[in-house]
Length: 162
Image 1 (tube, helix red, strand yellow):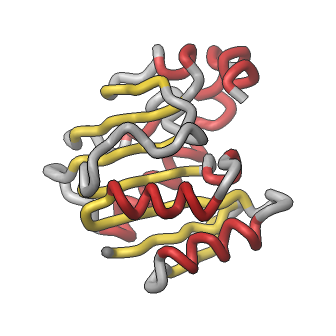
Image 2: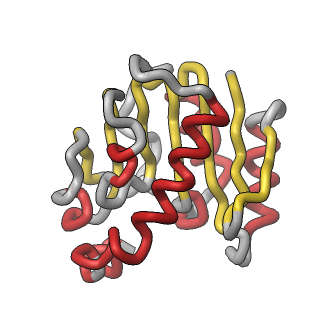
């Protein structure tokens, strides 16, 4: 995965930036995320999240070194399949995973990790065309019982308040 994203890093924002900004904007509104909240962005990519959450303290985690070099946020080069994630329990007010959850090798374990490190809010967008979309939704439903799912274009957005 990292090699593919490293190879396309120069064109990533042109290809995905506008779409990702729309998703982050919807998440900000849906979860009423204020500027003082800390955010972990799993599958951070080039850091387009900063265009929406300009005043937030953002940490981005991704395994594409070349994409992370483009980010203005604090970043950690880490494969989120290498679990547990390198954070203490309740480390972030909000944990986001935008169009990256399908890259997980174990949806249940990643969902548990997200819940472990999130203090109050979680949003995960799922790619509808993913062959494992139902498995992903079921994993999230089993960990986040109060989760709400909404169709948003090519994705399904799961949001939850803890």
